[in-house]
Every structure is written in structure tokens, then in C-alpha cells.
Length: 212
Image (cartoon, rainbow, N blue to C red; front, side):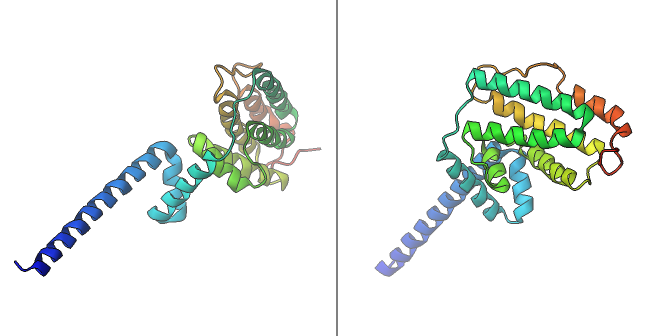
């Protein structure tokens, strides 16, 4: 075989090896992102509509998260926030819309105290999705209901669900990085919300507005 023939063979072999290595790295990346983000991987891929772009977005979230100084809460702060959450749950019985607004603000306060930037909701949810992928969709749903509540468009059941969703992230934010972080008060965290769902029809109309 002439020299140029061997050159073609070598180049072709190099290309084949490069393609195999690229596919292996891509598969490893996909596996890492899928395992790390769980349901958030599928949600992002569906929302973006393109696997490569979705994975690039998730990888960018990880890279951004690495540059954030996320820290666990000290025990005193965890206890203080737990007491505040208990007060919000109590408030839900008499005024579900006000309680949801308070829950949204309290979750934001905890996130800020942990070191998460909180100025933009979409960015905030993206940052949280790296550390808490299992509950970030709950957070998005709760925030959406909170916005509807400000317009008087949320039902009592919507507000009860939002309270549960906020709580799922709240608990993880408090306990993440801490040896233990029990919530104060009611051992059944949805007791107040459930009670309001049962009795709130006397105070909250079908649109979620309080009946005067």
C-alpha cells in the first residue's frame, strides 16, 4: 500500500476513535446529569425540546452553583425559621392567601440566608434545582399559585397544595448540611393547611378571595 493509503487509514482510525470517545463522554455526561437532577432532567428536556440544549442548560446550572457560597444554617437560625413556619401554618387557618404570601417570603428569606441569590425567580429555581432537584418543581408550582392568589384566582385547594409544596422545599433548605433540623410545633406539617381546606369554604370563595 502506498504511503498516502496508509495515511488515509490512520486518519480514518483516528476519526473512529475520536467519535467513540466523544460518544462515551456524551453518554457519561447524560448519565451524570440524569442521576444528579432526577425528574428535573426530564422536565428541562421537555421544556427545552432538545437534548443537547437541555443538558447544556443543566451543566451551566451546576457550574454556576459551584461558584455560589451555599452554607448550612446554624442551629439558632433553623429554630427561628421553624417557629416562623409554625406561625405561617397557623395563619393559614384564618387567611390562606396571606399565609401563602408569607410562606413565599419565608422560603426566600431562608434561601438568602443560605447564600442563594434571590433577585430573579427563574434563576433562583435553577440554582435550587442543583441541590434540591426532587422538590424544585414543587417550588415552581407553589410560586405560580402564589401569583394567582394575588390576583384572586386561586382556590382553597390550590392554596393548600401550595402550602404543602412550599413546605417540601422549606424542610430541605433547613435540614441540608445540618445534623438534624426538626420543624417546631405540629408533627404533621399539613395539619393547619388540611384544617383550612376543610373549613375555609366559610371564609374563602371559589376564586380564592376571602369572603368579608
